[in-house]
Length: 369
Image 1 (cartoon, rainbow, N blue to C red):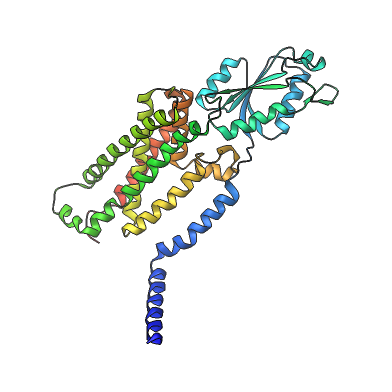
Image 2 (image 1 turned 180 degrees about the vertical axis):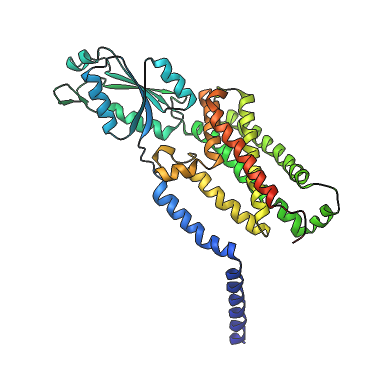
């Protein structure tokens, strides 16, 4: 009796292995998901922030200021990407998200260093909305100051002062909630639409649609509209709870934020619709959606600093809609960024939607397989 039961179990196991081998997508996901996770966590996930873009306003323009700039660059924490003539330009670029910080060097830096004055030798203005990056930049305030003869000194009562903007208390919730908005929309909308067409085919509803005069584009639009409304409801819920529970400050335009959210919703719906036209069943659609969701969460800057990633990971992150949306959401909510500052990110989301919708329309055939 036991021997017969074991033989039956063995037969069922063999049948499952054969079925998995024939299901190329599932077999591929079994191999690819651990591989992608290993590569992402091993090579791209890093909290050791390096090469943060900053701008410099050098009022002194002498040997002392140049030595200070070289010392800061030697730390490899920052890259000096621009020189401006006034702190107002730094403030504008910080709000636009073009730089993460600005260094202002006073005209009398030589006197302050030589006399070890109580006044700071320089002043950092830092975008504090990213708490990890802000902490890395704050560490530069403790660096020793090099004098003109090459000697280093840490005896200043105040070397480099740091001013944190947008999140001076470095509250993690202010950094997390805008990013969480992107994660929630991606998780729900991409997955929901990824199974939309497949569900119609599996339930036999495609036969009914074939008998109607509904065109392919009309079918796509009709399926997208309910999810657009769902996405906007989710946006309202997240923003309301963020305000009530976490005292999320809202500096920017509400209408601009909802416009960006709408673009992001369409981008996710286009991606989900494209996946649904390529998947053979609902399980396959879910697997493909998860395969896209994982790098979106890890590479978009939601959890780990974008600047800490290697270059190839940053290139990959630039292809993900969530990367651009998180910049938009944090820029509007925390920094009060305006639409001219956000046009590049918004254009990407619009282009991504048009591309994925076009591919979905091309791959969709209003017929039974």
